[in-house]
Image: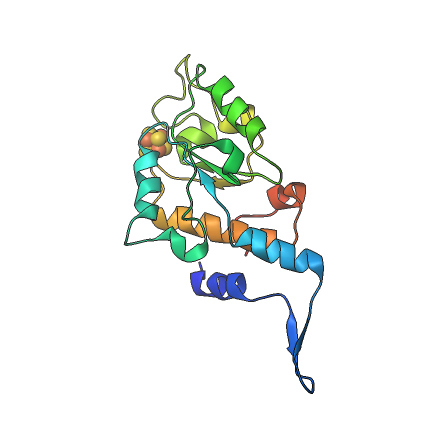
Amino acid sequence: MDVNTNIIQATDFPGQVHEAPGANFLVSTLDDVINWARSNSLWPLTFATSCCGIEMMHVAGAKYDFSRFGFEVARATPRQADVIIIAGTIVNKMAPVLKRLYDQMADPKYVIAMGACAISGGPFFYNTYSVVKGADHVIPVDVYIPGCPPRPEALLHALIALQGKIKAGLTRDQLRDSSPLSQ
Ligand code: SF4
C-alpha cells in the first residue's frame, strides 16, 4: 500500500499555470476540475450499526484525522452526504432503512461496505435468519473493506483509493469493476 503516492495524487490540481506578460493564466478542462473538487470533498453519512462503527469513529479522531483528506464533514442526513460507509451488521429490519437513506442521497453517490458483516453477513451472524448476507443485496457497493473489524488504516486507504478513482473520472460501473487497491 502506497498511501503517500495517493496523497500526492489527490492534492494535485488538474491544470497548468502559464506565465504571460501582465498576468498568469490557467489551462484545464472543466471535467477535471469538477472531479478534483468532488474527490476532495467526500462527505460521509454517519451510518454505524455495530462494532465496526467504533473503527470508523477512530478514523475521525486525532490519530488518523480523516479531515486531512476532505472527509471531515460527516453528515447526519443523507441529503448532504456523498458517501455512505456501512459500518456493521445489516439486519432485515434495517435493510429498508438503508435503502431509503441511499435513495435520499443526491447523485453522484458512493457506497463503502466496511467489515465482514457489511460484506457478507459477518463471521458470527452469517447463518442467522435475521441478518442480510451482504449490503449489496440491498444497495450497490463500490468499495469493500474486508476484516473483522478492519483497521482504521484500511478505511482510510479505501477512502483515498475512492478519491483517486473519482479524480480519474471513473463512472460507478468502472469504479466497481476496478480493484480498490489498484490506485
Ligand atoms: S465485521 Fe466484526 S467488528 Fe465489524 S460489525 Fe461485524 S462482527 Fe463487528
